[in-house]
Length: 628
Image 1 (tube, rainbow, N blue to C red):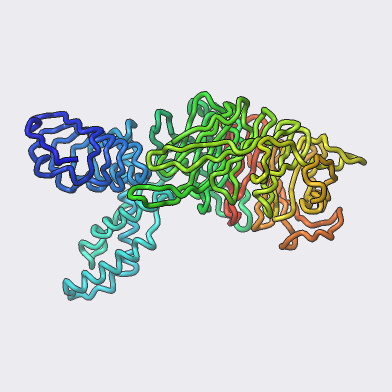
Image 2 (cartoon, rainbow, N blue to C red):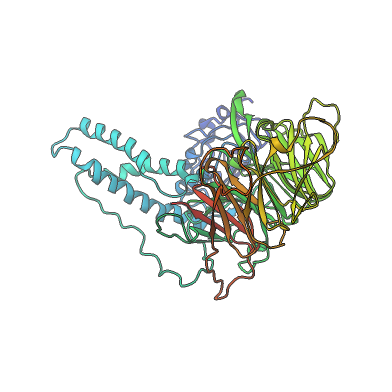
């Protein structure tokens, strides 16, 4: 685009430069300096990657930068009177940038259409006070005495350089999702801390908190450490959740949850104890961020702080399952960058695709006409997504990779026909591109999913039998299914009141491929579990730590630990005492002075290192334990 000519807008109060393919170099500071009384500026739908530092718009109050390619927001500090700012659909801007502009722009009250007055005041005052206190303490403890009484300017410069590097590494404050903002603030705060290097500058911290609560009633969220507010994206809300943070100093296993959260409430009502929570999965690479779903919302939670980082909501949906993948996306200038993508699905049979870092649902796949029970991504093909539906089908989709404008193309690769509703699915670790296992309403089935076979719609290849009193049967509802290692399958049904560990390789005879066959599961161990006939209380595994987890109908979590680490020997004959059971009881929890209704633990998931244990219940409560 040619440089702008704004002779006719010298005294304009509103100026629109939308949809002109403008790049940063097109914003000529000499021309903008003539718009000293400009109050509203629309730069949406352009190609801006940053702002020039000298646009000189001292009276600017409203700025729209939606749909650009902005990578940094710090130059916005040149607009000190800015009150309303929108920069949605700038893929490189994150929650950290939201906090930066709240700190830099003291008059800002609306960000992306949301009133941020309360949160911004906290960021500017409490956050700054605490950071300054920490930085000052770090100076006084480690660097104050390094500076001689009579010092030169060069000595001060050298010490400050070392101090800055040290403080950015060692001073930690707030949730990990805001670590970039914290480092940025620390870089500025260190100047305040060493203005008078030899003098102790005590900075008062926050006043003491209120008296401890006498009950476990969900508490109001008041600070961004407890919960970072989301923003409105793509016409759908990311409102606050509700959390009650409980910390316990204990040795050994944590006996009480580190946090209780009630963040999936319908209409954000604290009286909602009917919304059921179904699925949770930890973000790739992250050891503490988990995605949970239930009711009309999907939440991202920082397990360490109990912060609801983001919330995605669809008023007409009930989400049953979430799954992560990592896509290498092409960004500007043909650069490539890996981004975590979250797939969420449920009652409407639609898969929502969410670019988490951008807080943006960029697309959907109308996968089934009936509800989707569960979804999972292939561990080897990052764009391959399996959806298991109440229409008695499992579909394999290639979701494609979105371009820089979020255009993508999804295609259906396979349809697997089931005899009953598939509830849980798992890809066989040794051959994830060839075999898929599914726990269904009427048994456990296996399919050949190899794509070089011409048949797009396929029947199941095997059905497994399990013990039922004195006989073997295939008719159990299998509502829990996972692999403990490359060969050992863990499955459960509500009927027998136990959890089976069985060998995939020994149970699945490779001969006679392509024929539907009934075969007996080769049981390696039986884990005693609740005798309830309550269904859909699923299980999970933590292969690296040899753990199996399953909740029950009384709010308890059953944890089964392999006594001797390593793979289970195929020569083991049942019954064999391979596992040491431990039951984590649900703590006494009162809401408005009363115990909540009957608590079912629908799902239990640990991160790969088993630092955190996330428990989802039938009463809209998420509990997070931390292993000491």
